[in-house]
Every structure is written in structure tokens, then in C-alpha cells.
Length: 314
Ligand SMILES: CCCC(=O)SCCNC(=O)CCNC(=O)[C@H](O)C(C)(C)COP(=O)(O)OP(=O)(O)OC[C@H]1O[C@@H](n2cnc3c(N)ncnc32)[C@H](O)[C@@H]1OP(=O)(O)O
Image (cartoon, rainbow, N blue to C red):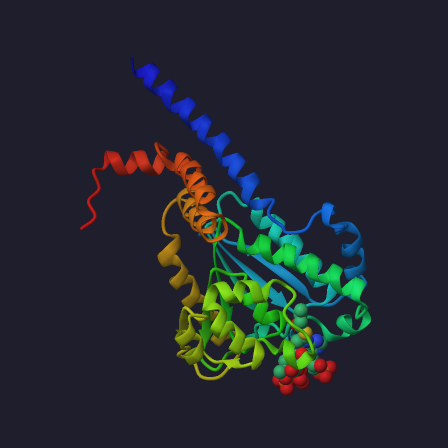
């Protein structure tokens, strides 16, 4: 009898593993463009690598929270071509991180990101190359937002242009006092192209998005909180800027994120998946996905443990 129950549990677990694999496939293969759209990833990678400088660094921590750092301080963390390729590679690593629960995206040395590197932009200003860069970055940022991790942008200093778009590819944004998010595209004769407009509308609504893009408004933490672009304001206790100041802010963000990532990785990842489905899919498809995700945690170790401990939620 006990053997049968154990076998049933094992079969159920195998079944949920298969469901899990299907979900991973469905949600993380998730770029927007493929070869059917004339998108040749290898070709654009090669082109982008011709504009080197800076890096995008990934630190995966035992806590299940990773830190992704946009690192090009001499250009206010602008994205060179090679950094765009780096970003895509880091997203791939995060897609395969089974123990992951949360992600913090930050800029190095006290500033978030000043968008695309204007030197690279000038060199690829022809429409064909611009489209390719745009598709490449849309794919990477869409995959970033679709990671089964709860993500937060730590906005310190300035997030301009593509940097502002990057903040919208995270689930949450926490703004340090004195920081600014600004969609400066209009001043550059542009509109967002990294998916930032589509995501912004979903975050702040079309009225606010139109104001932010049409006016190239500077969003400080106060305005950010008012329109729902910011989810919190970070106040450092140390005066000024510098390494201590930055690591104090990072610690504050880790603590904040810890409030949402406490628990086993499969459960936290399942939470992100059901919210992501609700956000992106038509209702009937979202409901079916929710059922599949539910199947991955129902009768799982955390669920059985909670049942055994007769937990109460007072
Ligand atoms: C679809 C994507 C669309 C886009 O992202 S378009 C790009 C939008 N971003 C911009 O236009 C940013 C332009 N930069 C600025 O406004 C200012 O540099 C910024 C960020 C406010 C900082 O101002 P300051 O604090 O006065 O510092 P600064 O101007 O002396 O800058 C320090 C060094 O960083 C460089 N830098 C800043 N942003 C850059 C960028 N995006 N691409 C390439 N280089 C960039 C800047 O040129 C300067 O370098 P250098 O010391 O003169 O060699």
C-alpha cells in the first residue's frame, strides 16, 4: 500500500516535470523575432561585436537572487554593441538557472544606463542595421521580462533612452533619491525601439505614457511613485555617492526583493509564470497556463510539507 502511494507520488512528480519542461519551453523560448521574420541572430551578433566596450556582468548568488550589472562607466553605462551581445548571453544563462528566484538589474558606479552608445548608433544609422539592432534588443528584453524570476531595476543616477526602456523590462523599479528615468527619444528624433513604449503603456497606462514620451519628461522618484512607474524610493543613509552608497542601495533592494522571493525556487518561479501568463496571454490561454503551472506545484515538496505541518495563516 505504502509502495503504491510512493509510486503514485513518483509518477505525479514525473508528470509535473514534463509539464514544467513544456512551460519552460513555452515561456522562455520567448523572443519576438525569429528567422521567419527575416531575423538572423548570428549575423546581427557579428555586426554588434564590431562596436566593443564595457560589459554586462552577472552574479548568481546562493540566495537565489542574481545581480545583473550594466558596466560601461566611462560612457554612463551606455550599451555598446558587444554589451548588447553580452546581455543576450546573460539572459540565456538566467533562463537556465533552475535555482533562481529573483533578479536585480543595476548600473555600475552610481548611474543606471544612458541608452545605446551614440558612437555605435552613428555607425549603424542606416535603416536596415537600425532594424536589426532593434529586433535583437527587443528579443533580449522580452526574454528578460519573461524570465521565471521576479526582477527589479535599481535605478540610481540616470536611466535615459534605451536605459529607460531597460527599466520597463523588469517587473519592478526602485528609484534612488535624486535618480531620473527619462525617455529622451523624442529629443533624438526617435521613439523607443527596444519594446519600451509597449511595456510603458502596460505599466503606467496610455495617457501617462503619451505624456512621458511626448514631453520627454524627467521622471523623478516622486513622479514615478505617483504614476506607478516606481514601486519604491531608496534613501541611502550614507551621504553622497560612491561604492559604499551603491552597495547600501543594493542591500536595500535585496531586502525589498526578499519579501517576494522567500520560499522554494519552484514556487516563486510558478508565481512569476502565472502573473506573466495573466499579463501577456488572452484569458482562456492564461487560464490553461495557470492550470499547467498549478500542476507543477500541486503535490510538490513545498505543498506536501505545508499540508503535513498543518500551517495556519493568522
Ligand atoms: C533605442 C535606443 C535609443 C537611445 O538610447 S539613444 C541614446 C539616448 N541617450 C543619450 O542621448 C545620452 C546622451 N548623454 C547625455 O545626455 C549625458 O552624457 C548624460 C548621460 C546626461 C551625462 O551627463 P554628464 O554627467 O554631464 O556627463 P558627460 O556628458 O560628460 O558624460 C560622460 C561621458 O559619457 C559619455 N556618454 C554619455 N552617454 C553616452 C551615450 N549614450 N553614448 C556614448 N557616450 C555617452 C559622454 O560622451 C562622456 O564621454 P566623454 O567624457 O566626453 O568622452
